[in-house]
Picture 1 (cartoon, helix red, strand yellow):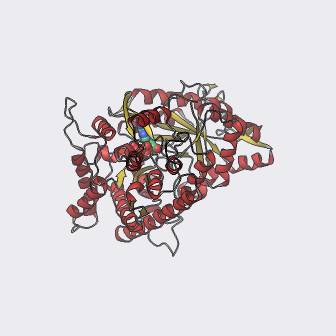
Picture 2: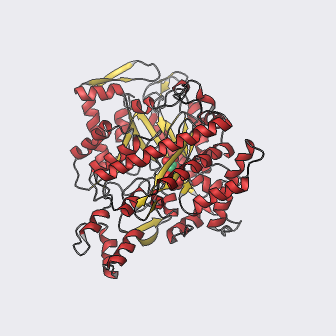
Picture 3: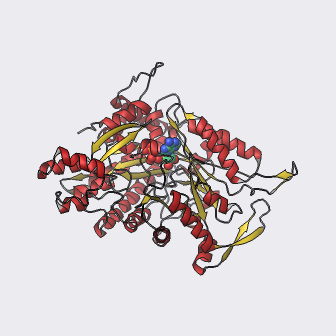
Length: 570
Ligand code: ADP
């Protein structure tokens, strides 16, 4: 059965994905869009094998996408087979400690945003505010003031008329401006086009455990300039996150332990939503398998899943090949590692279909099962491609450079994206998040609103005979059905929303997926408005203990505007 696009999907597709003529009239159907993407991505096979059956491969790609089993990231859908041809969602750009470098990066950021990509930066190399500027004998303005420049540029450059850019700023916890950074988004109007995360180091985590001090280092001189109390800074992070949802935290030590190409340098930053750690100038294209479609008759069809994984890796590697990179440096760095990020959406839908509550040991076990399978199969697929097409050029010196893994086409194969837009297109629950609501209002672009039921709930309600128009209205208003005693208990247990799930379970599911993910996991740990700072602190610590690479929290009602809220459910 092919994907029947929901009304929300059609609104999103028409606004941003489908080809338009000069007058802004849509001149492409969703099916034609998928055909355009399938044809252009399949064509890459010709580079390796003159006799390749491109038509058959395109049909296979089309089949996966039209069934809603696998969807690549938005830029691939928007730009494949078109003049722009930029297909990646994730970029990291370097920001060195010079005006030239900072403004080069600003220009490159604008170019990436125009093409639909999101950008992440580490500002850790920029000298602190009020430090010396030798050439002018003046004082520097510091990372936060430069972030404001990037923010203003982002505000101005609408992405090819489609979506406004998104950025991630990371500052190491040992940068002298860290206190100002932690609090910089307490003012809700400031840096609206940025997500921010504090880069925690091993030294900091050790000091935190001991309740002691750690050193701040000026990146220009490399001198230690003062010491701060680690628990005090941690409290500041917790407090700001509790107040505004930001900053998030990322564990730089852990990210670098998993760096597949340490010889190419240290990883200092991630893309905007945090799921893709990258080297400077590296980009990555993502794609997600819709797990809700991997179940048949109440059981997970592992053979189907395996087949989809293999085709998806082939697809993503072809995207690396045909991608039109916005800059020479990005092309070089990306082609050296050929990172791709296969992940999932519809995990919550799958759980409902299998009758498994999200906040249960069974769900955690399933997360392990599914992600270990995706990891294993995607690596096998990448190894096969490596044998046929050649290894990624930075293979020598990489973690795969050993006799057991002679072939590897991609330095990473797995990433868990938020799937903000593509989950709407596929009518799936986003990423690995619990369902957002049983009935909801979607704010899709420019404030347009759409009301919808969770399709599986509607089905169940009709089957079990408790579906009424009134109930529908109430659910849309309430969001949660946990207190609605007229709905059977088992149904309520299955349809817990993000807010009904306790923060611990959010983290445990994230950690289960992270364990088998090369890159990172995009996940928001939701708290009720009444949550305390201690609750937030506990989750930060739990994320560390359970092996997460970072964590982002959101306390209900603490922020009206989110960077990526345009396309997400509200
Ligand atoms: P999609 O569903 O559109 O494919 P995701 O919500 O999964 O995208 O986000 C994946 C990545 O795409 C983000 O981490 C970010 O790098 C990029 N991205 C998402 N939304 C935007 C945006 N509005 N502008 C720029 N980049 C974005």
